[in-house]
Length: 258
Image (cartoon, rainbow, N blue to C red):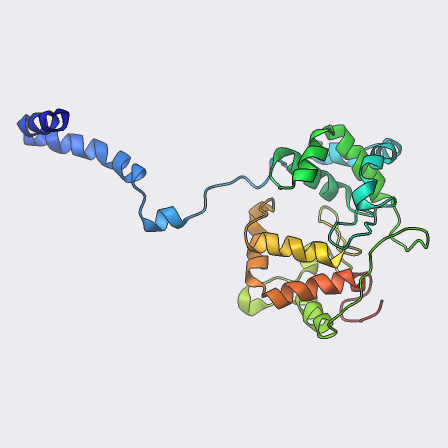
């Protein structure tokens, strides 16, 4: 009854007024009824709440390493007593850059990077705690210790992976728009502000490359890792992970030394 009454009232309006009402309503109708292309687009998402201002950089870099040592006791079960995990699927933290460490911890706390375990852990830590932990782990040596239980390095199961990874790390693939890994992570897998790969576990690297590739992880600014990982084949992802996991990142690219 209400719809028929509305139609009669609309028809009784002067033609110019009816057209004016239609023009006003059109944008709202379009917004409420997205087309196939619009509905296929992923929702807008802020990758991180971190803005690298001078004050933020100064804060993240000024932690107390001794206090970080005390706080690290709650991290040892997963990440190892000296920052080297016994499990290749869990990241090593020893020697990690302060800024990279602090940002990842903040992203876990903000839900920008997902992990049920790390969400719980990070929620119990203050921003100052994060800076202190970053200072402590950044100063830890990456040399082997006979008394620890680290899983790094892992044996390189497929020797052909070394050549594939060395090419992608040093040269990338221009034809597919893939930059060299070392452009961001450094020629020996280390550069300030980027996650360290120089002594990172292979299974962890592979898992994160797959997460970036399938958009399960999205805390990279400017979509860089999501796009690169999407362009890499499964075998190329595994080759890069195996290369770094075998400890080859400690040496000049392509040397094949351990």
